[in-house]
Image 1: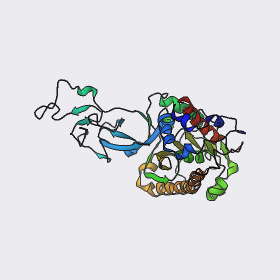
Image 2 (image 1 turned 30 degrees about the horizontal axis):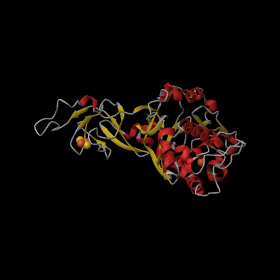
Image 3 (image 1 turned 135 degrees about the vertical axis):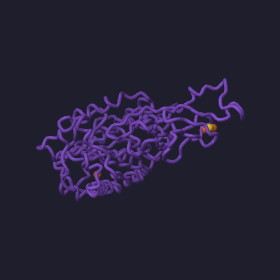
Image 4 (image 1 turned 120 degrees about the vertical axis):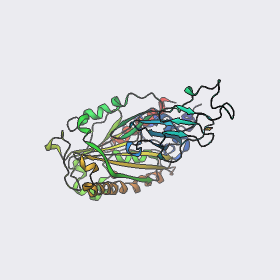
Length: 386
Ligand code: FES
Ligand SMILES: [Fe+2]
């Protein structure tokens, strides 16, 4: 008997039309068993954003705990980023525990000092053949390197695909890029780069899915974001046409809160006030505006705690020049304010999932279509493994 059957998630109720559907039940937000199902079935089969390229300077190794799995990000002196399982092939010691520069580009295990290069090759096995011998005829180092994880970088977001089964990242992103092609294309995306100092983090006491669900709808705007709603009201938001792997909101009244610093060159002047906020399932929240771009990745810590990491990308000099330092800080502050306003709602939903009177709830047939779409996307991933 598999775990889904034992827990009985009633996924059939989630897969109904919106008028009669229930949401995912409380167990999907409160139990460690479903947290592991999320990791191994919902996340592992997809492209998951685990951090930003700017987290990993050249010759650095950066450990990340992804839902309990120790993983390792490295970047060699040629700028090549790689992702590995962060575990020594010998006795299974976690290899790297703190981010830092490794000038020799050798990752040395602290237990018996085996050493790996940034390509994952096992380069040193001191005394493996006895105190006088660093090799042994029965041990082949070439098959005992670090175990790589499939990875790709897009818009400085480091995506991993643990199962190795997902479609190529470009294909995964293509429907969204097609949607955005009237504003931006792969070439003009290069005009954007990570802003220096333009990152922030929020810890939220909720299951990761609630943070996703909250981002998917604008319904809460008048009550949770009265400030934002005063200049970008709910009536001027729209549901973007859902793709297989994304959904979200658009606004037709975006204006930069920190002053004009230019526009992406392919973006038509007449549409400068449009902005879109899709979730690339499962955990990558995006914001595309005519003057900047952001990513928020939701990193689940445990079933009731999530880390939200945000990075803003800006145009040309605005990303890097000291003259724009205040502008960048002001943009980070204004997004932090908006995202912080959501925390009480997301944490309140988590608290509500302790109630036996609630088992998934109901949906507004108009305002909650994306929320149900995400629930169904998750439910299908879980059901595929049941
Ligand atoms: S566990 Fe790493 S060298 Fe032994
Ligand atoms: Fe919100």
